[in-house]
Image 1 (spheres, rainbow, N blue to C red):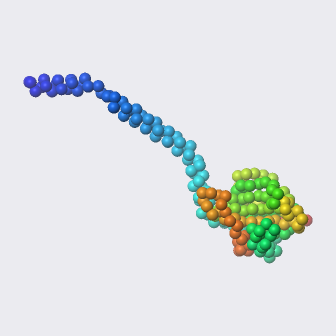
Image 2 (cartoon, helix red, strand yellow):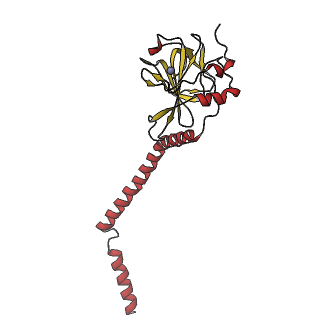
Image 3 (cartoon, protein in one colour):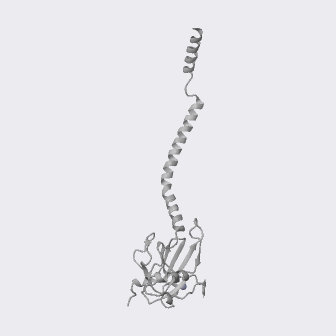
Length: 219
Ligand SMILES: [Zn+2]
């Protein structure tokens, strides 16, 4: 009997002890903040998922080699393209090859890519930059004009007309030709770090499958 009373008293005493001490309230507040933070991080992750997916996509694009190559000027056989990469020029070694053709001949994309530059410059004249797979950048210069719809971020398939041959920029005193250059991006995290590579062997190897003649040159 005495023991039972003692037990009841102790239970009552426990009940009278405040359930949440100051320390516990602090802990609850911290827990709540953490929950909100986790929720916040979750929301932030949701928002960040898009750039992250985009980064993953570019990693994938970087690792994928270019599928097919075409001579970038319609109707020009590979025999007519001279390897002039590295030849001395007024502004240093030639960073691409020149494909001579009549003024206005369609220029086609040598490989699939996404438009990352479409402007007029002092040196290149009407130029187009395409970013392709395998960390490749393609530079088409001295064009008379760009084809319509060569807007930033647009996908361009190999063989699609991107412009026409001309002699714009610092080529105004030369015969019409396309300056075609290929660059290799050397950093996956800093896309503007790249160096020129000779496109000629790649174009020569692609020649048997080239269908650049499917767009007839103007008469
Ligand atoms: Zn050139």
